[in-house]
Length: 551
Image (cartoon, rainbow, N blue to C red):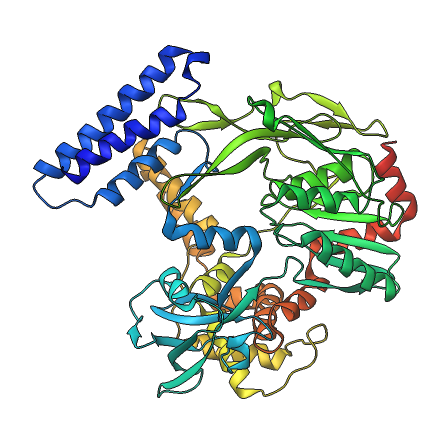
């Protein structure tokens, strides 16, 4: 029997298993499912038999499943057997590998960040080292995700790399063992100002709550009586970790979150089950537009109970809960099963995936449809659009010249040049480039290409195009040409005008060469607008209490 004919019957058998309860469900819907599965299997068989070129049934089915699920929401995904390991890494933060972030720069696969104390670091690999081969396999033309996949493997297995070390021209062979890599949920905690401690939570994988508690314990031992809790750009993760972390700051038996779905199994209430760790320490919670899901639960809970002041930008707005369901052949389905509702009763889901336009697009909930809720102290908060900060801090975009220097890897490259010329630098918190050193960077840029178009130049160009279209160009040509000449950017002028911003970015990149991720974090505290605002609010007890009281 043809393998695709067998596949058709597998669909029918699988359907029978799924629809064992069809007698109690609407018959018409399940007939539609059976009919369409039959059409799909027949279509696949015919394409495989008659299409002009060979087809890959696995790839076609995967594409069909992905397209089908894309009509729902971005979080409902099919996970084939060969991607299960990557999914486990996402939920546990654990994998077997060398412990380094790999990226592609100027058509080269290089080390972007080795994790301190893991195999890559212990083997002497540093930021800027280029990977040419992995176990004899040429990876020069492979993308960074393919290279990362080859570097991963069972802990204890050997891996052999051919690399060109930073500052060298000849390749060398480095051989070492993969280890069990556990990426910390809390990549950094430390003191930032006087009695104010800072803790960053980057993910909600297993053990996140334990790591947060340990970090705060260490900070309190160092004299912290106030806390900055950084959830910026945190994409979320495990719901139970969000519940446990919220429980650190609110009393036992307090509601943390409700989940509501169409299946009774997913209508649940999650309460704080344990005695709290600290219900009194003043907290400033940092959030951003990329803070999502579990990070929105924690920040929303602290806001609803008036337990901390939220600082930053409105969060992403993901109020959907996913559950993993096993499928045949060791594959899995990650499916959205419920929406979550934080203590005030609001759901912070921002996008309505259930209603799509004729072109398939989805929109955010209109402001007119948002409902008002109240925190414990009576402050008004709203649903349907993420968690709004109590104190908004706008994120400033880089100047065009800074963005150009970053995108063309010139900041990255010069940090490597500086590192090779300076065996040691000051601590991450103290390091600063002198004016003379900044001028060395400017001199190094002289033969480099980093041209760019400023926003003003773009506006002038658009104005000229509109004038030509509406037949006014000849009348204003002289003025436009004068404006172009006056506003034409001068790179040397821009390097001086934006000196502070460029120097700050360059300092952070240089610090990363010596002190890795933790150093970059420490180097940024004095330039971080949200951290500076959090320090200001925490140091002003009257202001802190006024914000939480809503008066």
